[in-house]
Image 1: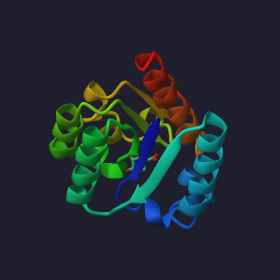
Image 2: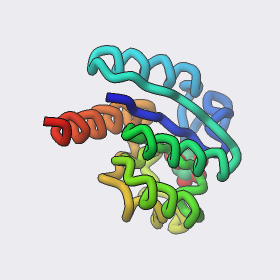
Image 3: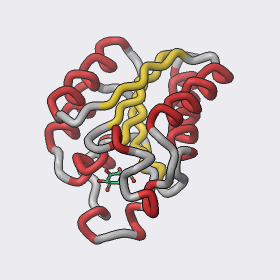
Image 4: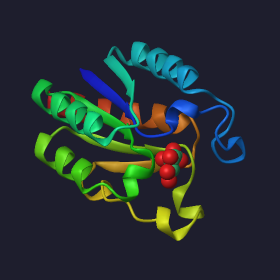
Length: 147
Ligand code: DQA
């Protein structure tokens, strides 16, 4: 089982970006935790970040072609990007949307996700743990499908 963990805009700044909201853990540290968890699941992972919407579209399409699952924190593109929604729907890749913060406890503009309707589910509000729960959810889904 292969899972692509994709990160959108500004997540490269984690650790120093609004730490009162996003905490002090860096993206490199989250990558380490994700790789550790993937090891215990016996899954192979890629872990990528881009500030560019088109890169994320390319990576979603790649996951679809490979039959891989996706864990995605699309950052602010979550709330704006029809292109990411279409990419997820078109790729057919089982996708779990994750967020560090509880977006529903924040500004109304963050309450709507354009990618949630084409995702298996959404995990938000658990900090870096959101990624680990997302990884487990997509892994279980892929394992059940391959039985
Ligand atoms: C975020 C929440 C988004 O609303 C925001 O634009 C981000 C980070 C999160 O992980 O909590 O960039 O996706």
